[in-house]
Length: 148
Image 1 (cartoon, one colour):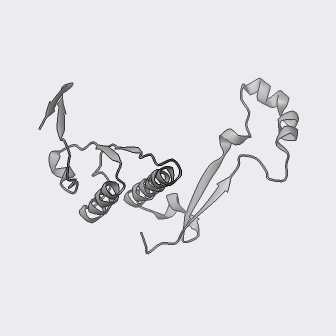
Image 2: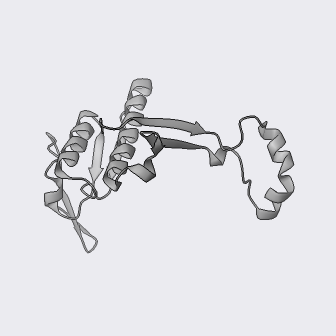
């Protein structure tokens, strides 16, 4: 999506000017009453913007899927650089939300990663962009797995 300027910011889950220990003390009774802490690292989040607006307000479902796939591919590349280990990528319904051009782009990037890739699709035709040098294709019908 070179036509968009994508920015990411990290939100840690509580106000940055507040010490986490103080926050826990301030809200102890409330958190105890409801059974969980309302603020904290479990609420940390990455927020993405496209051209200055939240991606969920700007991008199509296909563009959101590509953005998340790009993030996962970057994580896989980072793992390879840091630990010399490949990821295993699992993509459900590979063709959904993506046109043929975007499917081809994603398939190419997955193959370039050198990682093992598992994809699912409704029909075999939806996987035609996957052109790996070595692959196996399986069909699952009524709980029965068969190699095609």
